[in-house]
Image (tube, rainbow, N blue to C red):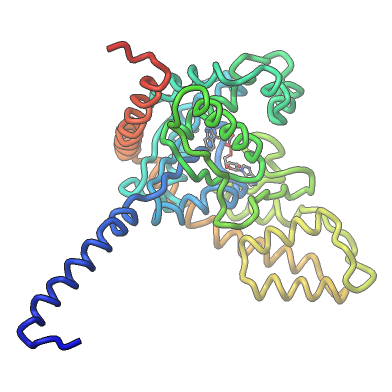
Amino acid sequence: MDIKYKEYPFIVCLLTFIVIAVSSPAMEKKEQKSIVMSGIRPTGILHLGNYFGALKSYLRMQEEYECYFMIADLHSLTTHPDTKELRNNVLHVMSEYLACGLDPDKVALYCQSYVHETTELYTYLNTLAYKGELEKTTTFKEKARRQPDNMNAALLTYPVLMAADILLHRALYVPVGKDQEQHLEMARNFANRFNHRYENVFPEPLAFNFGEALVKVPSLDGTGKMSKSENQSATLYLSDDDDQIRKKIMKAKTDEGPKTPNAPMPDYIENIFQLMKLSGTEEVYEKYSADYNSCIIRYGDMKKQLANDMIAFIKPIREKAIAIRNNETYLKEVLENGAEKARKSADITMKLVREAVGTKYF
Ligand code: TYM
């Protein structure tokens, strides 16, 4: 092709135009961040299970996504009707969110009861949830066993309220620990039923942990998981002092050690290894694994190492949380600003919901 010099500027202009035209929709797409939602009940103070099951993902996700992280105070009423400690717990959990590094300028940090649209969506979703499936939920059966005198309706519809929290922002990703997997499956079912019965309003929300399996942090005594309000002596809290951390870890159950190389680990030993993996370095974990496999492990030394690593991890969070908890003016501001952001997103969804259902009459 014979291109004349005087045609060069024209060709450059044309190419520039093509590049801009092709790249601009892609750029727009990139700016539209996926939506993330999650929450924690203020039924006590936060522990390592909450951190490694949920908060650790929140921290990473706040850098990449549009995030809504809340304190599920309405959910807490289903099991903790006595509200004397509620205010303190809400402010404590918020202080710990902030102390761990959640940034109120990057994410919406709010309290569930401040965003009234949640309970409106809960009512709509309740019409799509069936008694049979709710009664079969593992957490309902567990709680019904534990509190037979308080089997309230909100306990039964707990997964519906949780679905409302998530769908209120049309969230796609929900960072949670392993114990919440079934609730997420139910939220997907409710979203699909709504979309089929009315209009396509909701995406299917997914339990998320950066492509890794969802986490379950075991308790220190080898029975079940760490928990806010049960089994407190076998749970490590983000507010535990150094002495408490050391004592709890040194009390963790062990035995005389394996008698044959590469022996399978009993649950309670595997738990200590799992905690070490979460809090310490790869080298330390590998060293103790090798010691175990060659039957020379000294559990006393391993627990001392684990206690030191845990103290190094928890201490800065604890100290920051205390300082933040003492600044109620700041906490009030964070809660109000967070609720405002959440309400904006909720308002858009609820307009779509009311239109889809047909409750918008003019
Ligand atoms: P809650 O308050 O029991 O726990 C909060 C988060 O911590 C995780 N978690 C654990 N992860 C690993 N190991 C453990 N031992 C452990 N203990 C707790 C939980 O999986 C959860 O991610 N129903 C929710 C609160 C909620 C919510 C929501 C969550 C209300 N609305 C909307 C997500 C989206 C609950 O009871 O979490």
